[in-house]
Length: 139
Image (cartoon, rainbow, N blue to C red):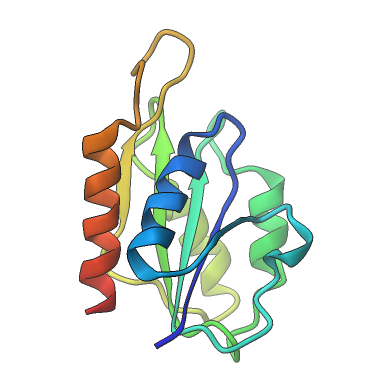
């Protein structure tokens, strides 16, 4: 099976989780705003990471999803970090549904540090859980 990890992270929180997931499945995590982020080859599971900023996901994430092709991406597994909102999954689900790209039932979410809230998160335990999430999906 083929996997890819793409993420967008303003603060670095989602990037930490992306690297833990990528390490667990043996690939490299790539930021969605990097030139090499485009998914051009068949990918069984795309691990897609984003955070919710002020009630929505960043335009970088929206643009990245708009360029996905259902011929190349068989399924998306969402992971996210947020300070207040539970998950980026509902925002991503809406965008993927118009592309006919299915979402994995499972998702990973953890708190992310923001100003004085959730200092030190994601922590080592969060990253272990993220890796376990990825390993479970690729079994």
